[in-house]
Image 1 (cartoon, rainbow, N blue to C red):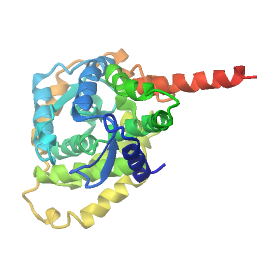
Image 2 (image 1 turned 30 degrees about the horizontal axis):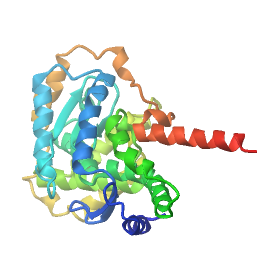
Image 3 (image 1 turned 180 degrees about the horizontal axis):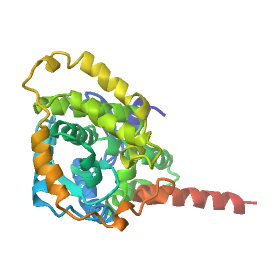
Length: 325
């Protein structure tokens, strides 16, 4: 079922309390979002503690933490619509896992291991801009909404026919808000990843950074992925790396061709070395336990509460079919 049919069906069934189709000022496209802004923020607030613990806690360097937050907030201020007013937070995690991710509502994370692989502030800005782009494009909301949209529509049809109540509708938002741990493992589709890359480049350029750093940051990650070692977590939770570099290079040749001629767009390698790399070098290595986390991509029930609910409902349906004469 495509987006237009979902939106049309929702409007026809008069269930706007939980479902919303609106134009996103960041992307310019219509989206089907079942979560409001306040619900997105609540999910992020609830999930951040568990996620921080799973990734080894916060890096014990006020300098490095403050530096990451400064760059992140600088980028967030360049976003569209009401996005600059979100309760943005940028956290540097004490983990050996190479990763970066964002929760709906503006809680954004980068691991120490990824920070140590980068060489300048502009590369950091692109990574942060990419994660900010997932938030402003509301990709997490979109993915969750698509997961639960079909069940809500089924419930709506039954309600309209007088065959059922709206239990699915009533429990959708409480389930999402009440058990958000692991939402950062939602896998984005190809279009969403390319869109986040595009937005990351948009925000970094608006903040005064050289967009060539986007190519270099992705190159670092792809090099790690092809090294024969464990692929960086960033590329497992951010799939489809095969054409992301190609699209970045295309934008450098077209959209940002004039920017590349302007020397006012900087990389700031000296600042990055001083405030990030040197600060991290003073710290002890992360604990071995911080290398992993409690969620498994192969285990649907560990991703988020609605996924667990979805898995439970599937199993119940299978059992019912087995016991039917």
